[in-house]
Length: 406
Image (tube, rainbow, N blue to C red; front, side):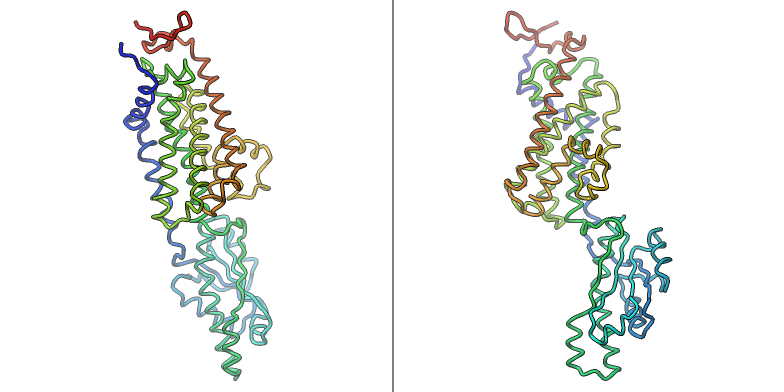
């Protein structure tokens, strides 16, 4: 039988990743599809028809003029006007509309006399996308309409033009108040976070599917047999997954994010380092999960069910103080947690390698930790009949490694 060395093991694994019908969709299609499908809806930063309710506590000519102006703006859909803030807040929480604008009592008096005043814009921050789009879409027109309404009232009262012009340069402040989530921004913040989770989920599912199928085959493929028996061959099995994931991380952070207008590669060396260490750690965890499940067909189900919690326990999208301590301990052992921290700071904010070094060391530690566990799990399968009887099995005779044959 033809000898199958380390290089053949590497190349055969690459071939299986890209051609095996059970898993090629994970390695070839999924991340490419998500790279355009997932980020595309959030490229519209100022959407139309933002559903709004106005609470008018002032009930003056300026407040009524302000409401009429809001009703005339195309991107704001005024659902109603109320003088009961409690009812309006309850309806906002129930999702009947996405934005609440409050005109405070005394707004007209303060605006005319030059006393600093403000309008309150509340968005249901439990919905991250709606919160960002609502605030961004309503804030500009709100200040412009308020300035126009105040100027019109001043003209009626005969105020000098110079005074009106000065007041126009100082429009009322708009107080932004997300009800739940205080993170401002989605496209350039939350999308990169979620993509780290997508990398992780797709890789874990793909590797789990492929190796599970190999374990269930009538004859184990030689990359799996050799990886179980030899540490160098374990790396030959590991490296194809690492290379594929590294390619996709660079593709997303580069071509895909550039196409969508998302900040990326603000610090090139630090971003490259993060992509490498992220790929290393995720692929090491993938081997552990794949070896642990072996012939049990639950790897993909487990990975998919745990992907969404991974988004929130990173601590960048949801406050850490609201996450139980035991979840933070679990999050420490998930590669996406340090990867998100590093990627946001390096790729989106331009942090240097030195500034993200703690996160890179965290990823390196997870890589070593999970590769060690994968190796130890693989050792427990060395005496399995399917491994020993395989024509690809390595036997040690008189201190030399030879290829056995049937």
